[in-house]
Image (cartoon, rainbow, N blue to C red; front, side, top):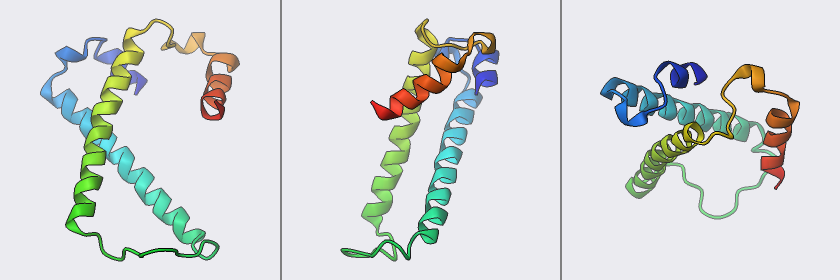
Length: 113
């Protein structure tokens, strides 16, 4: 990700169609990896969690529509998030400026608070 951002500069409005397509593909691929891993982890812990409510063995058209809209909104959100990170000076992009406090502690704090 850092290589992609540094090699293509800070101006996202100048991205070519191929770069934009690349961003969409990478984002969707990441969502699929997360989806598959959650499915595998869910199968491992399925015996411990009882089913409540209606179980969906087959997704209906409405379900697929909402999943697709969620994936599409994730692409737009991640693009805007990346753009904000690139524009603000308080985000660190150089590895020599990275330390324990501004990486690990910041990440853990984000999930706690």
